[in-house]
Length: 126
Image (cartoon, rainbow, N blue to C red; front, top):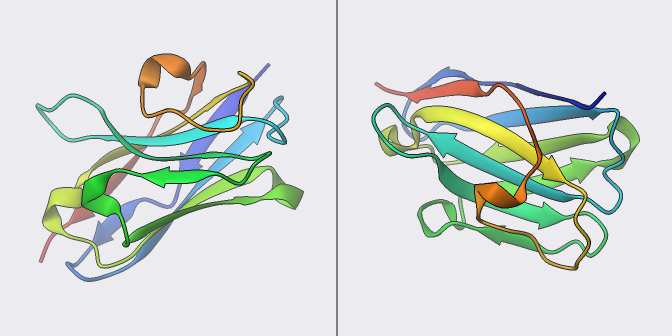
């Protein structure tokens, strides 16, 4: 049984940093497609970042480019999203998603991900 669990969310001030973690069990991430998405109240879920473990390919949505970094800890089968220079508009529930589809790239479309976590809330406010 595959389980995806996010953690690390919280309340921070503008300009602060935060690291989200996504722990995956029952699923080998070696060749996986991995994505982070977020959803603010009243807004559709949006793609944030993705990576492909096997190729190391990474991609970011425009609003987070240069501020967020996606990475993987192979030993712990954990995915991280490092978020720097946080802004109030980054406030949202953040979701991790994984999929075993083959390929070298990753996807910004949530329909391409099979397993999802329940989300962790990030609130950026002064």
